[in-house]
Image 1 (cartoon, rainbow, N blue to C red):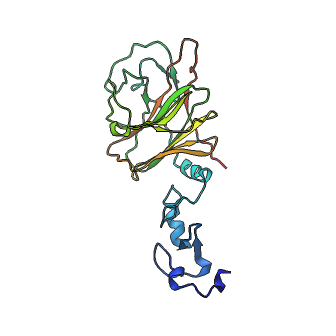
Image 2: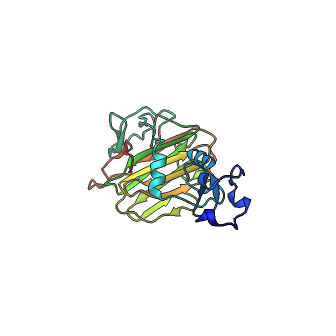
Image 3: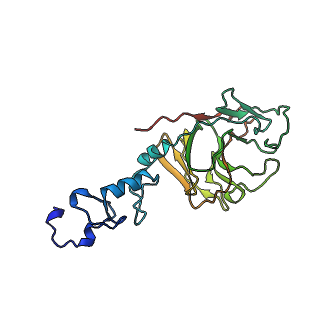
Length: 256
């Protein structure tokens, strides 16, 4: 037993956060070998979403636990018709979007995308943490994530963090986090729902395979200086009707 190990020094019984000496009955030891008093360790984890050791940053929990942790930051968002490309069809409740195939005659306001089949939510976020989920089931092409408010809505650009896009792109042969260069990700044939988590203050954007309870990718060290909007692109449908299924903003069903 640890209490019988008389070779331990006072340093071994010191909390790596507050540096105070604690008893074995109040000690938490991580798998990477660092010791903490239970009060400090609990407080640290209550303030974090990454489940890493406070000392060496080694990951301590599996993806399923991490997903459950970030799901508590769920926000209720709805799509903004004033931003939607004229070919997009939005549901009345603002939760679904698909390519209608034909451009509608709509007012060309400054918020509307006119070159790409994009749509943003009504809600934006300028601090704290937020999380939302999008159903991608039966889609052959889609694109989603978050973008900053000032992105170009009328022309073409490189869709990367440098231009204000933190997004995943998927088609049958390609799955990437859009960057310069793109970050290629393993294709996930059974991907049905994607979770998007943002910690604005920490500069973190993470993506999850909700049904598989797997972390897909995280962009870290991001610099946010203006409001962020959830962003959806349902992809075009072809003449055979392929990819006609909508992207659906779905309520979070807490994982076990």
